Length: 251
Image (tube, rainbow, N blue to C red; front, top):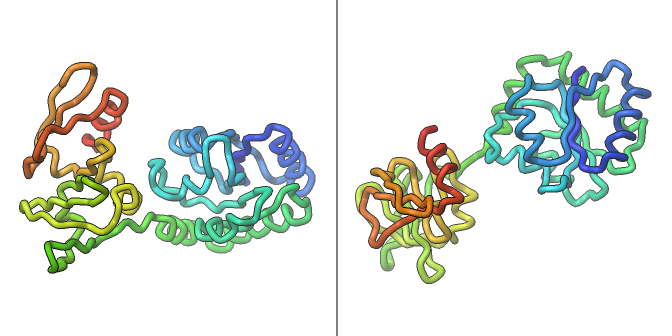
């Protein structure tokens, strides 16, 4: 069984590797990382392991972020989470954890978790991997509710061109030019929409790929966007996000 370990404390990682050697000699550690970013990069460039052993709290965030769809990975690998805290248990099992082990990891509990993962792999094989992939797929919002004066209107997310935050209110513009007021704050809305389809251009604007009619260099590495329907005022993407915006638009 090939296992990947994400652990940001070298002594803890070494103890885990040693414990695996004692209780599950059939396990081969094929890689390790100490951050969410490094783990995502490894998973994106290497053949998938049979099992992930992930510390929930890593140096740059929570390993649970690997399952929210924003790291570009379609994870279909069973997971055993390790952590010194138990407040993440519910979120961990929503990510389809095989088990959830509190630190310091008990070797008997580790052996049981490995055995459980092996039974899962042997008993169901590719079928369970397909189920895992489907269940782990992020469930992005498909419909939104907007308001025009006292009248409410539900619409599909595909109809949304962009959202502009003004005076703490989210103003939605649809592809047909309709304008509606949303009750969801922009930051919350961003987390609910598919990042493959929507991009946070700046602090005030979240836009759909279909809404980008074109863009041009605007000096100092910035990009000036042209939206469809037209946006009142100018919209710029900063130099720091210009490359990310271009890559997103080409997906």
